[in-house]
Each structure stands twice: as C-alpha cells, then as structure tokens.
Image 1 (tube, each protein chain N blue to C red):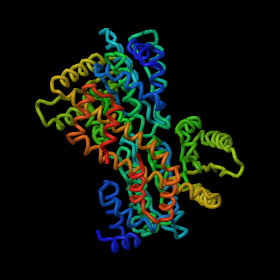
Image 2 (cartoon, each protein chain N blue to C red):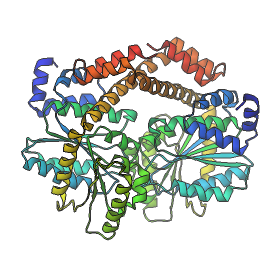
Image 3 (cartoon, one colour):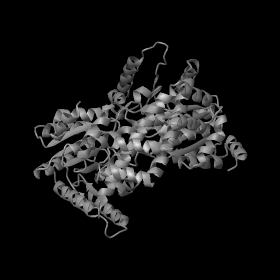
Image 4 (cartoon, chains in turn orange, yellow):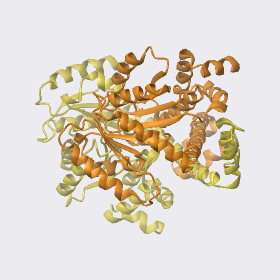
Length: 314
Length: 314
C-alpha cells in the first residue's frame, strides 16, 4: 500500500480502498497506523453526527430518512453502524443491509458496519479511526449509529459533535433516560413512533427535564422532536435541529473543544493498545513469568507485581 | 484504617467493614490499593461462580435458589450483582433488593451490587478486587451475577471459575447463543422457565452445539439443565453440576490456570488505571498541551503524538 496512490484513492472515495482501509482499522492491523498517518492532514472538515437510543427505538429507519435529507442538499454522507451489543438485543445488521440495498447505487452514500466481538475496549478506538478516514475521504456528514445504550455505546457517542437520542414511548419514562446517561449526551431528542399512546407524555417529561438541565441561558436548548421514522414524518425537522446545533457549536467555539477531546481520546486509546501489546510480550517472557510466579505464591501482592511490570515495560 | 484491626474485621466478615472496603474499591479510592495488599495473603480459597445470560432470563430467582442450596450445606456465600447495562434492560437492582430482604438475617449470606455508571473499563477491575476481598473474608462461594450479555459482561465473567449461562426459550435460538460469545464461556447451561413452549427445542439445539464444541474426550462435558427458577425446580441439579465442574477443574489443573489469568488481568487493569491517571496529569501540563497543540495543527499525526506522550509518561 504505497502512500501516494492510496491517499488519492481515499480522497476519490474509492469504495474498495475505503472498505479495505476500514477493515484494517477494525482488525487493528499494524498497517492502520500508517493509514491514519497518511490521511491525517485531510481530516477536520466533516460534521460528525451520533444517533443512539435503546433497542427497538427505530433508529435504523430514522437514519435511513436522515440520509435522504442530506442527499437532497447534495451533500455526501458516510454511515458507521456500530453494534456493540449482543445478538439478543440488536437488529442493526439487518437494518444496515436493508439500507445498503436502497442506497447501493448512490455514490454519495457510504455505509459500513463495525462489529463488536473480540473488540473489548477497542470498539470506540476503531470507530474513531474509521471516522478519521471517512472525514479525510471528504464526506460532508459522518453519521455514527449505535444499537443499545450500554457504557460502550456512551463511549462511542463521545466522538460525535451532535448527538441525537432516539426514544419511543415503550422504552420507558424520562427517569430511565436520566439514569441511563443519555440525558448528559443528548443534543437533540427524538420521540419516535410518536403516533403511539404515551408519546405526548414522554415529550412533556423530556421538556421538563431538559429545562431543568439548562443552567446557562446562552447554552443550547435541546429540541424535542416527534417522528414516525418508518414514514419519515418529522425527520426534516430533526435534520434542521442538527444543522442548528452544528451552527451553535461553531459560534460558541465548542466544536474546537470537542475536536480536542476527540484527539485526546485517540492518543489515550493508542497508548492503551500499546500497553496491552507490551504487557502480553512481557508476561510470556522469563522475567514476566517470574513476577507472576511470585504473585501466585504470595511473595508479592498485585500492586507490587504491577510496579515490577511497569519498570520492565518499555 | 489501620492494617491489623482492618484485616481482622474482614476475616470476621464484619458487614460494615466489608461494605466500606467494597465501596472504596468500587469508587477506585486510592486506599483500595492498601486494602488489596492487606488482604492478599488470605485469598485463593473461595469457589468463584459466574451467572450470566440475556435480560429477562430469570437469573435473579435462580441465584436466590442457588443461595439456598449453598446454605443447606452450611457453606457461606457472597453474591456480587454486577449491572453494567442501562436501566432500559435491567431489573438487577430490584431483584437484588428482594433477595436482600429474604437473606437479611442470615450471617452466611452477603449480597452486594456493583453499579456501572462512570466505570467505563473499570467495572471488571472493581468486581475482581471485590472478589479478592470476599475471598479473603472466607466466604466459601462467591457468586458473580451479571445482567445482560454485552462485551462488559463477558469481560466480567472471565474472573469466574465456573460460568453458568442462563437462557429462556424466548431469548432466541442457539445461533444467537453462539453469536453472543456465551457458548465459549459456558461451563453449565440452564434453560430456565422450562415449562414454556420451545424449551425442549432450545435444549436439543444446545445439546447438539455443545457436542460440536467438544474436541477432546477428557474435556468437561457441558451439562444442560431445565429449571423453573421461581419455584426452584431443577436448581439442586444445577448446583450439583457446578460442584462437579469445580472437581473437574481441580483434577485437571485448570483451576491454577484460571487463577493465573485472574492475576494477569488484575495486573493489566492496574497498569491501565495507572496509565489513565498519568495521562490525565500529562495532558494538562505545559508539555502535554504543546503536543496536543501540534496535533490539532497537524504538525504531527496521532501516532507521533502518542510516541511523544509515551516518552514523557513516567
């Protein structure tokens, strides 16, 4: 993979090159370091949106309609569907396939899913580097969608500039939203399947809760939208709110702060990956085995073992 | 917290001392290092059981009956209920409270829940150190229960010697079990709510799948139990299988290997915690800010920034 033609193909949004680069990143192939170095001078232009919410909230159909609103404005969009949850809760991959079919012939749409198994802490790392590549490729919008609302999903959402939280009346009341940590990360709320009973109650509760959270009058006021994702009802308004939030970020210098956090998290993830790699080497070396032996035999305790390991780690 | 009286109280299973020690560990209070050092010479006696499965599988009532079978043998048991999932999927805390009431007056039972929010990668670390403390306290059995089946739950289950995977017919077919990673970690399967339709089909599928997985005739044959957790039907047999698996571990030296992995994971988690602490210090120092500034301005790329950070990290 030579530098010059590779970056040109990325900049051309060559589908095969993009897919291969993202696979290398997802598999944590050593070559992914070179990929990031190669593309880094082109990043920083894209809008990064995050869409999250509990399973069954209808995120897939909502995303599908958001893609259409972006394309109507002649902007390009890349979607990363992150599925960190187990097969017991998710339908992301299926939704993904359906969307892929619909947008297959459209050069302005790129859809990719990032799986979960074996990733452990590395899922947000892979997703972040995928965002960097798609940003460098020149997509106007990068939409990161997660299925489920666990800690992994919250971590992934940290890399988005604008986070849309999708709820349905059935997903419970606003107290659950507060407990789940979604309240802290939401820039836009969507109450989907809003033709169902209890939708208005959820909207009212969210209105009260978002007002409670506003300490500063200059801060962004979290809009709450009612949608019917399958039909696309209300999606245009969601897109407008996202744009408004992006404008607000630019004006308030928050966009720069978000980018700084993005880069900090990237450095920390690389450090972590490097730590695991070196730890695995050390633990199977003679000196590593000796420390472990002493720990097993209680000559030392875990924190003493840690200090000995740390000294030996390069 | 002086060393001598503290460890005596832990060894006496003093409820207040245990609760405080576990809170320090859960909050990653710096004093938890001292706690682990103080108790470490007493660890290594307890059986560590893990119970996991998709939400709604009825783990709580099953655990409740397992507690009773352990108590009937005059053994003591400590339960750690780990709830890494969001409030949208879990009822662990409620189940926990119900059990707490029932066993409140029994000195041979200790129940503790470990929450999730803000823990990020640290949940399995906290749980592992909680196991160490309860092991040193002399509980015969430590039962770690997780709600849900995401990556975090799989990580937590790594610290158990015997893993019981609880399923219900509604949780789907065996293909989903395979995809979820539960197949690899199960030592005992339980099909709960087995009076429901499709229970026998799930059992048959599991039988085929566990047979497929057996490469070595000397290996443990994964038993599959049908239970009705609420009534306690079949729970005695599950307890017998757990005991049989523990015997098998001892005979085959696997118990020692599991303990080694437990200790390795503990060292790596401490190294990781130390990395985050030092990274946060460095990133707010002048030299850290300079690197970040250069990265933001694309004078360097993330992997160059990582190298500069690594050089400066103590």
